[in-house]
Image 1 (cartoon, helix red, strand yellow):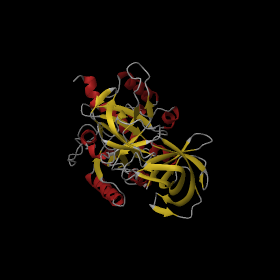
Image 2 (tube, helix red, strand yellow):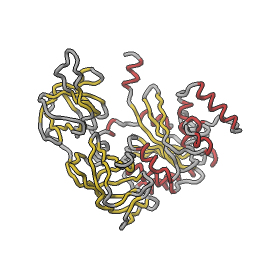
Image 3 (cartoon, rainbow, N blue to C red):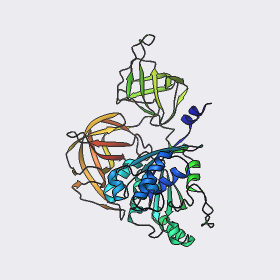
Image 4 (cartoon, rainbow, N blue to C red):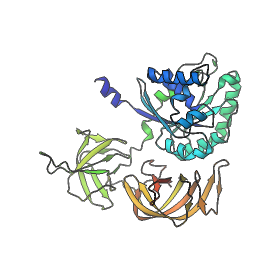
Length: 422
């Protein structure tokens, strides 16, 4: 197999970084890119020159991720920065998310598709409010894996007792959340300790480096392989010689496995048929797995269009017009009762109206605030919606793709909130 195909077939790990301001998220990512030799010489030279201009004695690796001018000037991360790199074992997509409270919505955006959340804590300050906030959001978004990196260990003389106390404090908080897999790594992003290479200054730490975890974390079971869901994105009618009667349905497999000759049902019509062929990049395939972009043909000439969902005949999602969701509000204008929005769920768009605010979360104290009449920017709340037509969904806990949605303001066409269906 040639190197190009090998790269395409490599497993992809998506991860997000979060933490309080100045915990070193951007420096950590810069160190990962630098030590794994995933940056070009001209990029490194540009960062080196900028570091010299700022008067830094060392190369400031955080400049590799802070792309906005305002970020570089203020020395903070404002927007989500995506970076891509690969090692011989895996491909990676990193979402570097802001630490400030007012950018909570940006963290939700960056974390929504992640397999892993890396949360940073400053060894000098331990577990602070923002650490808990980000861990709660990671738990809310059902990110399967979490790594708590205790950074700046060089500033506490690499003391094992400091690290162990932070692990104990975080374990106590995390026990209240739904987090299945947690790892703890003591690091120095500035010096590269325990990131790609083992630290000589912390011989007491016998665990894996961060890069080893990233390369070897088992993510195959992160996806739902049981509930077959295929939201139709586009109907293919090539209208070219040899394909005059071809009708295929294109999209991305949300979950489950589809095979040739599977009995399927199309929602919302409820008509049934059988899969006659599956294609990926114009090549015929025997089966399609979660996250694969495919097209399929079926035996019967049914009326199927964008927004419909193809499912297995004996395994169908929930269908309702009454939705109970946890929402993170993005917009400056507050969400209000009885206001109409467009709800986008998989490839389906429906109008909806907010019927009830059940409670708002105080995510500093993990407490519910009831009798709330409106929701403001960055608030996380449980609400009830009524849609104009049925939505076909699984709970977010069961299926992150068919259990999530976004809310759009009809007048501005801007995304105002994201939701997780209970």
